[in-house]
Image (cartoon, rainbow, N blue to C red; front, side):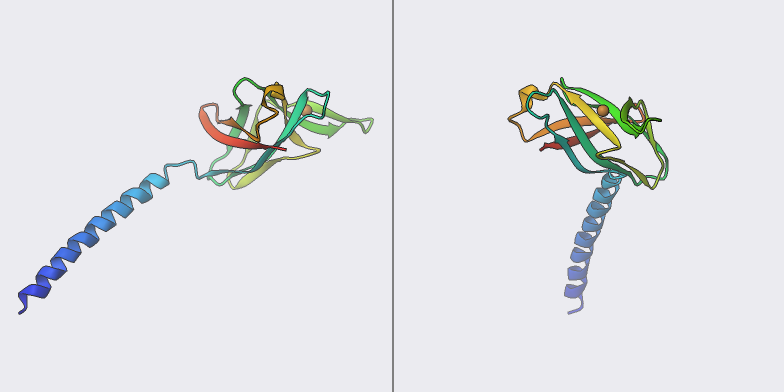
Length: 151
Ligand SMILES: [Cu+2]
């Protein structure tokens, strides 16, 4: 009478052990992903009729412990450059190219109207699309995929 429940327990113990191993394995592979960096609301304002330049925005949050550097964004054959807007001494809004943007651990950078932005030329051929796939280059060798909505 005692033998049956013991066998039963053994069989279930093995199942449980197997389940534990599988869930541990899947856990460790998840932490290897790009979960430390979050890109929120990436979008591109299409150029007005007759203009050739589109402007892109997004928010990049760094949930890692260490600082990262955003050095480039590229979208296939489009020409993309990183810019910032600021007021000059005559109180006129001007734009300056940005080379590298450092984002401290636990911090974020917002590309938004009136501040940092992406200047994009060559969109003419994509006017019928509603999104484009791009890549952000982090620390010169980490390629982070990002899909921009076209508005
Ligand atoms: Cu600009």
